[in-house]
Length: 397
Image 1: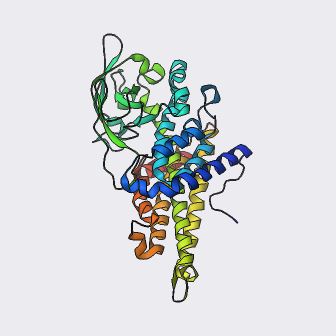
Image 2: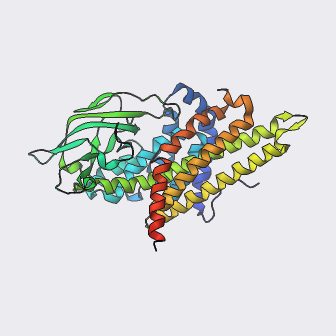
Image 3: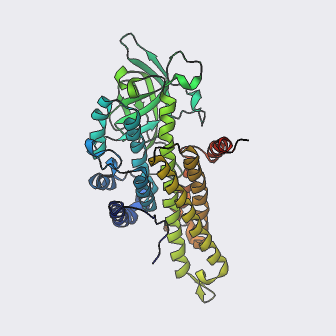
């Protein structure tokens, strides 16, 4: 029997890994996801299972204790995890971005210090770029890192929307420094901020106030981060080169957008499964509603959108794995997958009728989760700007 979102050209190892993750999702995540989500409970047992599977070290090279897999493999794993519960993929995503940034931009000492523990999941990462008044204008960051006489820095400011903000041990944090450059984005530096997991003052001069209450995307902790004269050494500058933070973060965001697009495919795939199953079980006028043309057309559109979004995710991941620039491809994947996810979830919700509004049905949870994908790692409008500018570069007269 054919299945949506299959990928051609995978190795035996990739297929085996995806089969293991799919079985884990069916056995360990789907049966408990809705109950955990309704309680806004961190999925501790699931995270321990992911550690045992090696998911936290999926893309970390073997020399640091990871599995050394590609971005494509990671994206396909994220699709499977999000099919079970999108919040689980959120636990992994920012961790993955920090590991990626260390691999691409960190020093040998920084990679040796963090990556082996990140590979096991014993040390988990968070990614901090946004601020309360910032939106998508990254160059307007106001969190300030002031150089001290000993060569280190004092960081003061307020950061917002940290996924894993409470549970993380390591935060890749973007702050403004005075490096003498005229362009605002050249005065930004990425710092590797260490802290203890939890809430309250989790490091000197660093406070995580608590979880932000959200409409959906529950279970995973999303937080603020308050810094008041947080002292940090110069060796905690990513790559030990100040002023390169904007480019480092944008590189991380590119792979993050592939991740968010993969999440959208996973959520849409699950919504399709729920909708097509319910349509074959629910009867009206003496026959299953799947046999009514209006519902049949809806199922056809849902399946087509899942396939199309998945194809864009695969293309964007393979482009990044090849070492090429993929901001256009990742932007297209994130934009279309998120929009299609919202539409597929709504169609599945409509197929369920009144029962879709009940918390007893899983589609209710997906209906609240899908909107986050429209804004995570850049809104649809930001993606359109990126895509449009890249297309003008490629087709300039």
